[in-house]
Image 1 (cartoon, one colour):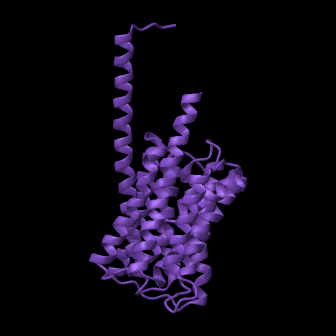
Image 2 (cartoon, rainbow, N blue to C red):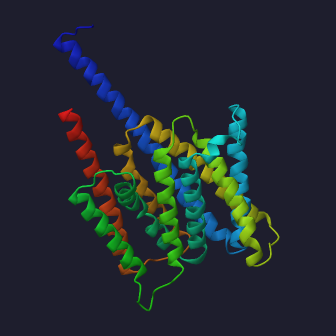
Image 3 (spheres, rainbow, N blue to C red):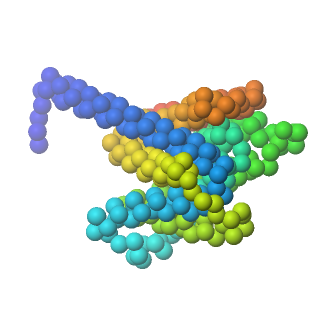
Amino acid sequence: MNHFNPAEWLLIRAFATIGMVMANTRAILLMTAAMASFAISDAFINRASASIPTGQLLAISSAISFAVFFAVLLRNGHSLFTKEVFHRAVMIRTGGEVFGSLGYVMALTLIPLATASALLQAQPLAVTLAAAFFLGERVGVRRWTAVGIGFFGVLLIIRPGATTFDPNMLWALLGVAGLTARDLGTRMLPKTITTPFVSAWALLLLTVLGLVISPFEDPWQPIDIAVFGWLIGISLMVVLAFYCITGALRIGEISAIAPFRYTRMVFALFIAIVFLGEFPDTWTWVGILLIVGSGIYAFIRERQIQTLAARKA
């Protein structure tokens, strides 16, 4: 057993603290880059949907992203067709990814980018709610209050019953529900099942889904250089976001980087206002502030609880 004098122990603790701070800083930068990539991808979807049907957009962009992850699997010597695809966690995650992506893509094609992005910010709060009900995680009164305030913000944006209510906003709520199931499935995944494996399967099924819904929409349209650029941009931004968010989760503390998921809303608002000419109304701004504020508070409260538990241990 090694013994250190107080000076050596303080020096070791100082270097360990500096190392963690540097790791968290890198992780925060990666998480922010991932959110920027997602926001740019959302804007590309919004632009591409003006020229081609949703099914065609979903099928082509998902196929391109699938090809990238499939190549990663092959490079790592892994197979796509294994019995792990029938693992309960994989099926929950894949199903959630498919329906969540469908809902969110449909929302991006039918409602303003800023509104769709704002509603998606309720997803971390929905994960807290679902984890309490389905995974038995303990949630205190303060976090329950934060969840309630966040969902009140969602109602302010949607405003059911008002003359401004747009039923297409419900697609965004389907996105929230599906992506919540995806995150729950991800928490249940064994360490032996890789992220490229589950991502490839989700994208493969999204490609098939795009082909299935295509006959119920307008015929496939010719793809010119501009639209092809949007589709390539969607796929590359999704892949870049995947690698950035994976890197962030591997090197940083989740409680430190989780609040930076909300930078996606900042990027989305900037793109919507500057490039798309969208200006959210007053109630939408209030809803955004409630959703983001309550979500950040929930993350901070969770970190406080984890710190107290570690001290008691």
